[in-house]
Image (cartoon, rainbow, N blue to C red; front, top):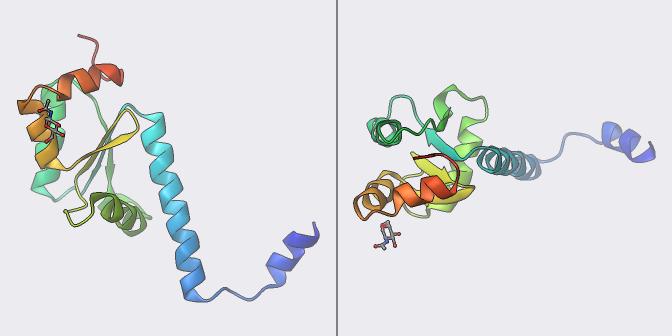
Length: 129
Ligand SMILES: *[C@@H]1O[C@H](CO)[C@@H](O)[C@H](O)[C@H]1NC(C)=O
């Protein structure tokens, strides 16, 4: 109880610290979403590359969990977490299968073409046949 009182009495932290906390919250949100869902697509509703990624998964019979970052309060925070994962690449769309970061639309397409995507989806429980 003492520590809670201290937190309340503390003035708002400097912006660098609150940014760090927000980022941790965004990271936890991403982690939670990708751990609890076989296939997750972080998307922007107006991004055609996101549409391509979603369409490919739908066409395979997968119903991915889609997170439209432009419709999320924490969209920018999640985007910055994805940006770190994707390195220099475009952070959106970001596809996660079985809790693991697969990549963007290019990796998704390439995996489909070389035949590794469907086994990955089956392994994750996203496809039965
Ligand atoms: C298939 O393509 C993906 C994405 O480029 C790559 O990571 C993977 O190593 C490739 N696998 C094979 C067996 O070619």
